Length: 301
Image 1 (cartoon, rainbow, N blue to C red):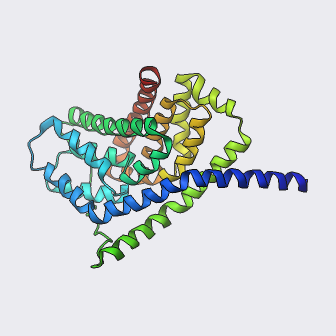
Image 2: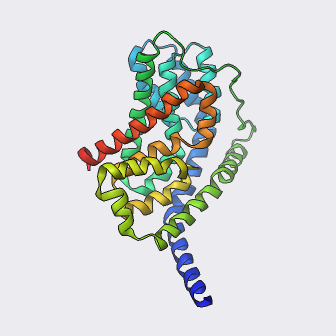
Image 3: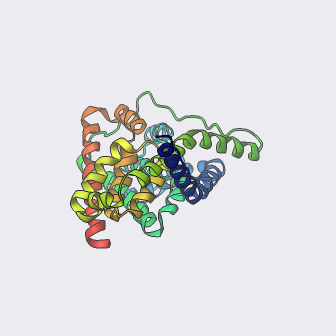
């Protein structure tokens, strides 16, 4: 028994060290670039979002709103107060919906993390998140044309924590917060990836997520709901699954349902949407992820 435990511990440490060497540079770079954007460009990005309200873009406003949502470094609990402030200043709900949807799915830090998955997966993630934001905005535009979609009562824009007069100290504090927020989930993701690599046969992943494209997409969308806790933590898992035969469409579905149904995001969204619109949000996320996954598998790859 001791021999078996020792052997397994050696194998697990080997896989852990291997995974860490492969993924750690992307995580560190993501934290650095994400913090730089947050400290030195975050306010500028949010001023650009505010300036949208002054432009008469009509239906096309969902396009820049979705792009700026991806560029925003804020988490959901920072995005909602910002959206509340934008709503009070007169920004339309469809533009706000596009901005919030794409912001939920992606941010600059997660973009850097996702480069570890390869150019194809990164492109799929960027494009699918952009169109998810656009689709959300268009649906709000046509289905809630004459009635409000969001209820931001009680929300006020949060004050930035990056207020120290020394820019280097502001940056270091932001990096420290990012380490604290994402570090445990990143390590958990590496550990789960090691366990999957050691104890789950690659053929099982291929059959589950790769061979039957429709079923694989459905399973990936479903698995994304309970497994997704932090974007950085799921990158090692996705990397391992793609190596083991997961289809790109299944990965796309996972990358949409995961952040969109992250428990902290759902808690915040339920407050501003109410029960009925919250249910519509979940239906939209599931359908969009399934359609995106099927499209990617059948048309693109």
